[in-house]
Image (cartoon, rainbow, N blue to C red; front, side, top):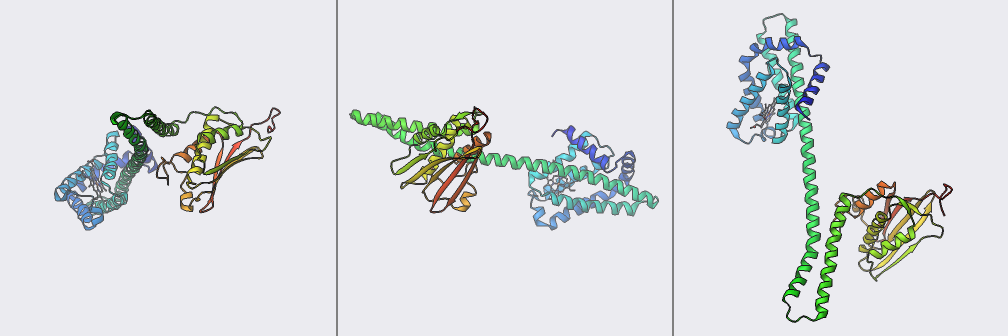
Length: 394
Ligand code: HEM
């Protein structure tokens, strides 16, 4: 938010508390009365901070910093009592909140400190006031309004800055996680390739079979590395789906074929005759089922049964991918849809997040049930394509 907008907010708050020219005039009049008390009030301000070690912990520069802070606070009060509350003034007040976030001071302490400062100023005003009591009340109210306005600006700045910092930290943490995951996923295939390249360069008289074997290995691992990058880019910018009528049977078969399910797993696809096509982007739907099939495959390292079954339900079609693997613990189940969450030694933790992102765009849904030791069932709900007469096609 720019200085102009801060000023706009300040003006709004001024009108809310009924701030007017008379308030400004009263502040100018009380300023010389308060001036002689300021050094004592500021000493008291920092003495109180020192009595509270949790609050004082943000002051890391000792006495030298305190005497600098006393100077800053004196300037701050001088500015407060100047009677000129323009855009630059609001900008200076705003910076206080920002600075406090930088040093890690909790906003509640600023509120408490301001309350103490306010009490001191009002007491000083009362003791030196030489006019009538009604005038004292009005001057005290003007001072109170002014301090409350300042506190609101400091607090506003504090919240905006604290939120921005939190978002930056979270972004950095996410970037760190992604970078770590990508590095881990790429290092493995690169190491394998390095070993094969070393062999090809240094082996004395390798047989043609050995050469082919190593070239194939390199080729496989280039594909693996490429897959990691494809996953990442497909998550970062999944294109807008081209929604067509997709025959599920074909899509499921292709997804199964591409998923390299090994011989220890018995896989079957059940699509009842007359199953309507669904409304989806064929390429993206293949990614959805590919990810679910690979998860099912990975949950059964010792083999098992993988069944993929489509069932029409009203205007929708449910496709369930079920495995007979180890199942998912409830605390893991609660988190598996989160991006970057993974329990696999290898994997970016983006598979289900991609599935969800694709389904969101075509009004599809993903559900899961799982019992530890009993396997898992992931169900994708898709919109059935209407038939030529507008009803569901069969
Ligand atoms: C009425 C409440 C408060 C006001 C008006 C206030 C005012 C200020 C001002 C004007 C600055 C300088 C900002 C800048 O130049 O960028 C500042 C910085 C700072 N404030 Fe406060 N403050 C308040 C409460 C507190 C409290 C309770 C603490 C607790 C220790 C505190 C600790 C600090 C520290 C450590 C800095 C950084 C100083 C530096 O740069 O060395 N403030 N504050």
